Image (cartoon, rainbow, N blue to C red; front, side, top):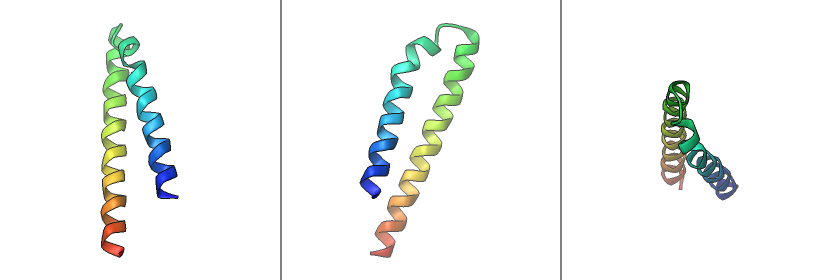
Length: 58
């Protein structure tokens, strides 16, 4: 189950990274890119928190 979640998040991150060059094209794109970076950071924090919790439980 955890691996499925990790795979899904990796797919989402790959999609964000692939859309990056287009996002930097305009000023509104730069704002959007900052928002995407913020989302990626939040996703990583949640992932690390989940992994740490799982390690503590075992």
